[in-house]
Amino acid sequence: MVANAGIAHVSALSDTDARQFRKVLDVNLGGYFLTLRAAARVMRAQGTGGNIVINASKNVFAPGADFGAYSASKAAGHQLGKVAAIELAPIGIRVNMINADAVFAKGIPVRPVAGDRSRPRRSRGIAPEKLQEFYRERNLLHAEITGAHVGRAVVFFASNQTPTTGATLPVDGGIAAAFPR
Image (tube, rainbow, N blue to C red; front, top):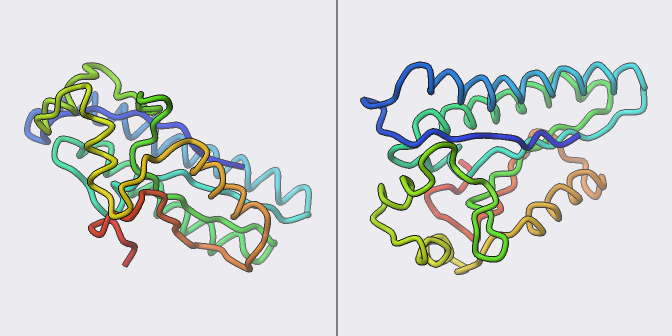
């Protein structure tokens, strides 16, 4: 099972409406919780073990200004994944996390920001046509992160190639501030 959905609200904490903050938490953190709970129940009943992958975010270890609700929800979801890894290991269920940076498909972010889509670019002073280049140039490998990269990370965890649970795999081209610690 892969927990993947998420939304963002872009604003400084001092300007964030409490309803918007709760909405991001409900979708992201609440979605992780409900999905983890359902998957654990089904997998436990099947008695065959399994794999759960949480698609968290680069923001877990390296949050950004104006992304308080998103960063907090993803960090909390990441922590739920660690708790699930501890709780589910005795029944053969592995739980691992992926921390991807912005994912692009043909120059367009795959994860659009709810509401004003130009706001993340404006908060960083980036012209729309330069957004993809900004994300590519800020990582050590100057890599454009695609859905295929994230998909291969999921396949790695789901294929039981290593006896791994509770791990975090960055898929971000190497963002030093986001290195797991």
